[in-house]
Image 1: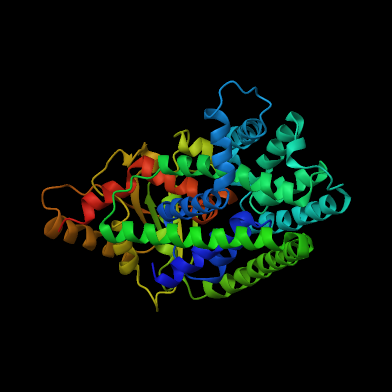
Image 2: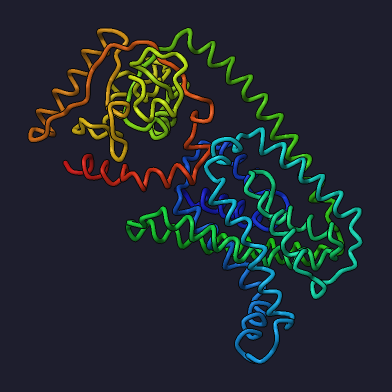
Amino acid sequence: MTFLQLVTLAFVQGVTEFLPISSSAHLILVAKFTTWTDQGLSLDIAAHLGSLIAVCVYFRKDINSICHSWFSNRRKNLQCGDRLLSIYLFVATLPIVVCGLVFYDFIAAELRSVYVIGVMTILFGLVLWVSDAIGSKSRLLAAMKWRDAILIGVIQALALIPGTSRSGVTISAALLLGFSRESAVRFSFLLGIPTIFAAVVYEIIGESFSMDLGQWLTLGVMTVLSAIFAYGGIYYFIRLLDRIGMLPFILYRIILGVFIITFSMNFSSTHALSSTDAMKNTKVAIFAGGCFWCMEEPFDSLPGVYITTVGYIGGTQENATYSEVSKGHTRHVEAIKVAYDDSEISFAQLLEVYWKNIDPFDAGGQFCDRGRQYASVVYFLNQEQASETKRQIEELQNSRFPNNEIVTAIRPAGQFYTAEPYHQNYYLNNTVRYKLYRYQCGRDARLREIWTVE
């Protein structure tokens, strides 16, 4: 990853984490307008850790007062302001933690489209507008009650929906409850401390951190940069709040949301047309290599590859569902169809990429996924593909793996059934879930074991 990428991602993550403008909306724009590969879970953790450090440093006096209220005088009752505030923060954090654990898979599968992000960016921009307009702005944080903390916490859980903005919805809720802008922002930012901490812990669970010195240095730079940008965002937002109010952020959200939706619609239309035209001079290759989520990423970045589609092949049931196939109830195999221009990339080159992303010695599935539905298979569409596949298998077997039998099958391609929409581009739309799956499945560790040893 280049330094420019580090700075850009740190800036986007750091600044937008606390401003009420939706960090996910900006991150999706970075993904769509650049050719940068996914930064990976480790850098996500580093960026969030930087944001956490920034908010802790900025509110260090508040944090010190809260800690002091618990340990300096044990005889004080629960009505001690800072002590009670800490309990309110804990209570308000619980809903998003519980909802995140319960509904994460559903949100990741169904609510991470660019269109949803655009709509949520506009919708909750309007909610912020209404809240700022009708709220009395007369209550101070010292006047907070249990019902206020619970309601703000419940509303914060909506931030799990991409495009919503955690700070945006919590500030909106506090304003609707009559809190002043300063009090609403202060509680929102303080609430970000346990919330971001919980997110960082959740992400760390899925990361092995087996990296060299250079990779650790990159994570350190990301953390520092994210902390600097996040601190600057917090500092200037609070400093300018009374002068500019919420209106600039509201208008920005609406404009951004409209742009995202328009871009999404135009991109889909243009992409469909270009794909249709390209298919006139395009060839197709079909590979099976275990979970099809993990097979799109290595092919999507190749020059000459127009589009990748995940689906099922080998069975005859036309309306087979992911649940049926993954449980082995049909004869389908999870596979990926690659549409490519053979004037830019050959089938032989695609095969070379394919081998580096499978375990060719596993006859019972791939990695943690077991069963014939996860077998490694090259489905040929013509004799040239069949011959090239046999040639490469023989070459690998004789020159590189003389002591291990390659069991990857070669079969004629039958009907390919496209999988459900939420499985397409899963690695882009569900980054954290995808990274966790790859790690927990041991896929990358096994691939390194096979292919880094000459």
